[in-house]
Image 1 (cartoon, rainbow, N blue to C red):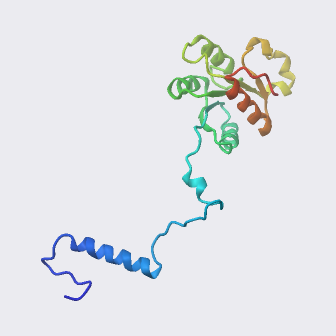
Image 2 (image 1 turned 120 degrees about the vertical axis):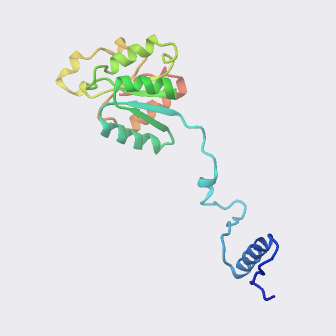
Image 3 (image 1 turned 135 degrees about the vertical axis):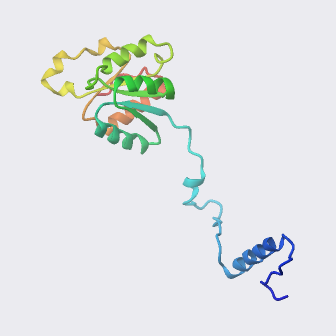
Amino acid sequence: MPSGITAPNAPANSTKQRKNKNQQRNRQNGYGLHTPVWPKGIYNPFDIFLEKSPAMSKILVVDDDRDFIKITRMILESHNYEVISATSGEQGLEVMRREKPDLVLLDIMMSYIMDGLDVRRRMAEDETLRHIPVIMVTSLTSTRTQGEMPSHDYIPDSPWLNKPIDPDVLLAQVKAMLETGGTAKTAS
């Protein structure tokens, strides 16, 4: 029987044999998928896709301003942090309990019942949450209401950053907080 024609009563492995012949023919003709082989010591541009990335720190951003969350997410993810978010204090506490982030960026003033200061107080009272480092974020320090804001001594273990946040300052503060377990000083 000519090559490529299958007899009606052919054994079940004939399809497999035909597939193997086709693959062999494709390799001989230069068709098919090939994995490039790079000489030792030469940069392989595909390595970034093949290497496992190091364990990422998980950062929770709690802010009622979705644009702030989006921009902060872009900055942090571009530096290999995993970012999760919440748009209210209540949701933030739920996400903290469920996701167990390594760090929280917490807006002080939110348009819901529980603001950032309330969230921070509840975290301090909760055995499972009190160890999570927090960076407080506010836009009020640059306005005339600055005098109404509590001092840094009010929440001594949480540095504060002023909006708009400089990406370099944010990244430096996040790195410092993660490296020290939350004992880094304010960078704002």
